[in-house]
Length: 120
Image (cartoon, rainbow, N blue to C red; front, top):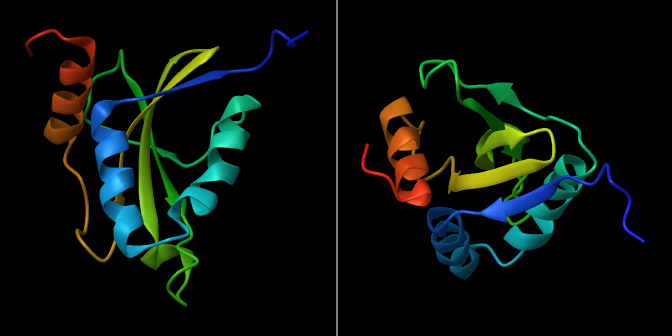
């Protein structure tokens, strides 16, 4: 029987597309991301909350080590996720720090709007 304190993790289309795209360059990305997903499933909120998205949205950015490149966490991936409720987390997107410096609040809002199917 599944315990009630497991958090369900959902993936936005954007997240799945980016994960797939990055996996072509970085073979280990799925195993790199897995520990973060496991922490989230256990109810541990990791990373830093992103400001500027709106008080009603609880969105975090977490650093994920890229084991394919021999650099520190700061050069790895950024995984963006939304805490929808105490039992539900939506993975919004992931990107490699080598591809882009940062992600804007507007872009995050767009991803959330796309996922919820409502026009922003």
